[in-house]
Image (tube, rainbow, N blue to C red):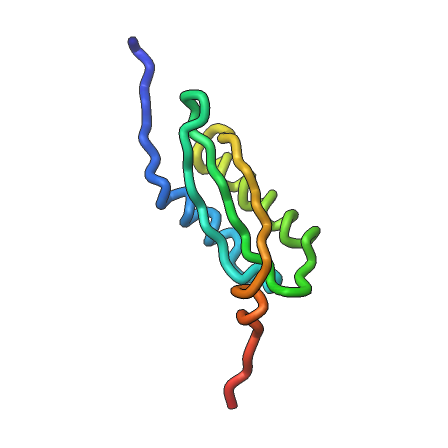
Length: 98
């Protein structure tokens, strides 16, 4: 048909998101999944927020990460961002070993 297609592995999306979110103190971790919705690829990003973390800071960091992802891919993809907390985030406190 004359249209070029490029297949992007979900690992690239995970790496870009993880790289951009590294160093944000309020984020414990993240998980990226991709889905096919109405014949279009979409991503779900689950961000585990540290207990007492600032949601606005986290959302700004995720927004910046998505902007970088869009620039890397050369197009925008639909994304659902899911902020989570709970046992994992309660146990993931910063600890100091002496």
